[in-house]
View 1 (cartoon, rainbow, N blue to C red):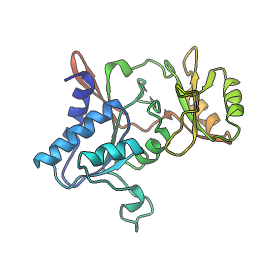
View 2 (tube, one colour):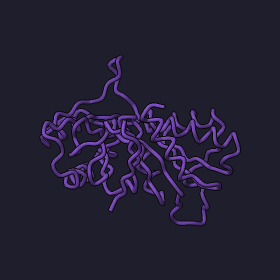
View 3 (spheres, rainbow, N blue to C red):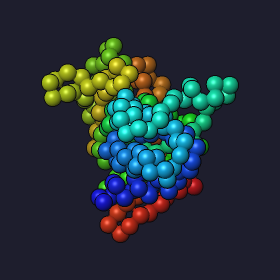
Length: 232
């Protein structure tokens, strides 16, 4: 198995019969979904309900025979539905287990689902560990209305912001019909909490890829084996 597969396989140890599990989006999570489907088919696990974070994940998991549901369909009498577990990958993981996510284009739905989980478990290979967030781009989901103005405003924050375009030149779309902007910070993101507050207050920015104080546990696969990090 490659490192992503190893991390995904280790994550299945946290599964128990009858769980409701948030299913993330991305290449690493794909391995987790495949392993989950195998365990359900063999009878090793039973009565697992998956809650997908993207249309792609929904189709992929459904094709593998994993029963799927939604947050709103979980015990409607509860004000706040709760998942037993959510499993997803990450683009970057810092020493405090803060994350950058969203290069799989599903950051808004991921954040909604994973904020309702008792345990948010991140799976990654060692290449995703960073001393400071911002080694790569920070994705931000924005409204199509005046998208270019959002790009200009983000560029005023000291980063290089660009509208995410497909090879055809058309704007990349999320499952919600919104555009995506990628922001590069030449010296990394020095204060992700302040940046998150600034982004949250900007009209037209639907969601950002800073997942702060959300991950409870990160499973890191490296050439030396599996390492588990827990948020203090």
